[in-house]
Image 1 (tube, rainbow, N blue to C red):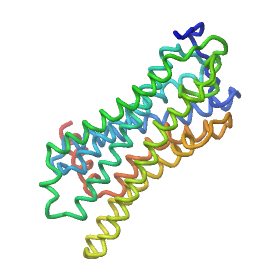
Image 2 (cartoon, rainbow, N blue to C red; image 1 turned 90 degrees about the vertical axis):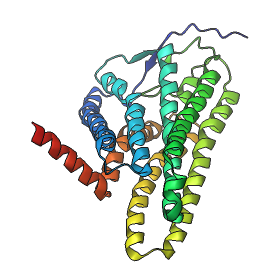
Image 3 (cartoon, one colour; image 1 turned 30 degrees about the vertical axis):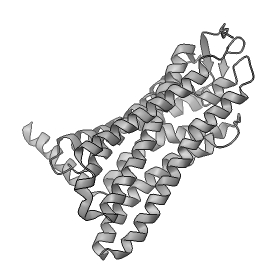
Image 4 (cartoon, helix red, strand yellow; image 1 turned 180 degrees about the vertical axis):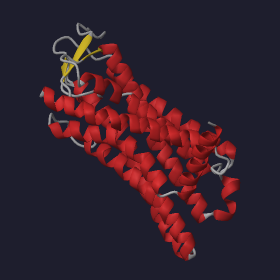
Length: 307
């Protein structure tokens, strides 16, 4: 049966109702978003320009940083402007577009993290065959596969949502458009759609996390055969990746692998993975990576000398 949509515009409740708290959040979130853009953008430029960062690991890191910029930009700019607005609105079509791109870039990032774990597995467990296995062609295929996987996942989410009828309430209890808050506004029971979303979002996160954990267990087991210096360097690289994985997957699994609720904690957890985590990732990867820091210093030095 064709859906009946009397609702064309949605009102978003936002994070907090207190205007003073909203202004405080604006002052806090704006520098954090700018730091996300600058930090990740600097990694993208450094990896693209620096000749010392040509290994597959940095090739994937550059794309991960690009995805972080896109992922954060689907939610945070609208959230920041809404913090200063008395009435926060978004069109139903705009809401569906935000859901599409939010899930598209989110799953692309998950798959890129899996790819990066595979890259570290090959580098540490099969070092003599590393360059043969991780050829330029395979690297491009893995990145393309990550983008394709994100696209397919996101299309499934939107195809589940588009047929739903919205004919009564248009007030969404969230600060951006996501599936569960939108389902609550539908004029029909969305139990089946909720199960599909759970299978699509939750299981992708869980299976990817299982692959990641298994990869690092194998890596840590193989490190016993390496020299002390080799172990130190490998652990330093892996520690950055494991930290990013934990920051990303922890909140995502908390939200998607349990029944939905109206608790404010859900919004605060969402803030963590939409605002805070994308800002922290460049810091985590650069602080523990001497090669990236050196390449950034050289790039900055070249710019200063050319002025």
